[in-house]
Image 1 (tube, rainbow, N blue to C red):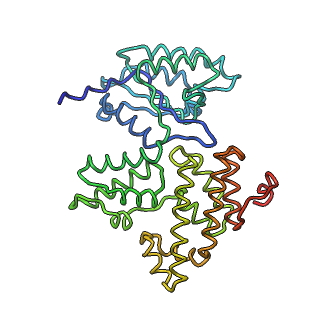
Image 2: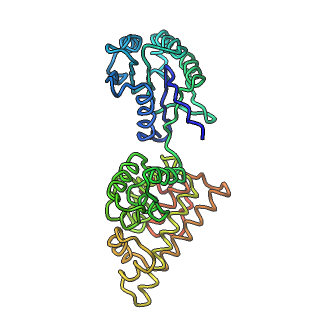
Image 3: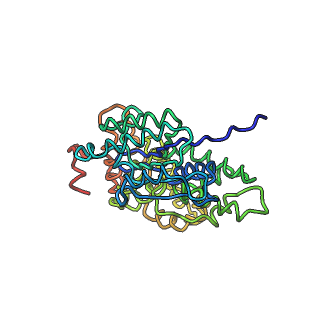
Length: 367
């Protein structure tokens, strides 16, 4: 097998996220890019790494440092966060920034610079899958950096890609992470990649004597993080908590991995069906604990499931599933915009309304 070619670090790199309803930026991906650059330059050993926040530092001084050779020889690496203010500035600031952007563009064209610059821009505007800025010199800089191989996306991945990354990381460490274990990990931790990888590192360390990370190990050791999941959204709907449910919906919709209607409706529907089946078992004489085990509720969430089960009859679960179907039909037929249909669904379902109000926007005044 041929050797993997070494990574050639470009003089200027831009690590970017996407500006949407919320900032879409994955700290784990950003950290991996920076660590790869540091490793390739060897600056971890020399300590020639500086970090600045653009709003708190003088950009001309930062660029002077980039152009200065490291004291002990070797490369110098300068990392600047808050680079949105440079790449997509307000109109009033553009004249002063133009010569500075020109200096960075000139640096980006060098093949053996004294120092290397990493710009971290957490929220840049996109149009047609491309970064866009009204500041022409910045657009030219971005294109130059892209041509040199220095443009790196830190936009969070979709859940399917995230799960594959977990499996691959476990395999690289000599562990097998079955699909059920991956699902349990996502249910507990959420879809924040940095949090997931931190928990997976802990699971890998804890299973030094085992080749498999089982769902039982995940449930025993993984720690929940304060992030919404499609399962917690369904749970808060069943609890009738409108405020929490809408907040969780907003968080899920603000993340590429969890924003798709198909993903949301599929996860919520599976949770509703699980509650419905358990409610039917209880109606037939099973205890809530027996019903929870019978429908496959993971042990780490059984107590909460049993409490919510007492709030819900099987007929109500069927009504929630019907209301979810209505939401799906509204979106796919184009009769209601997707965001409005989802918010209406959440509000109506929390209040156990079978169909949303015919008064457009009424939910705004009721929430």
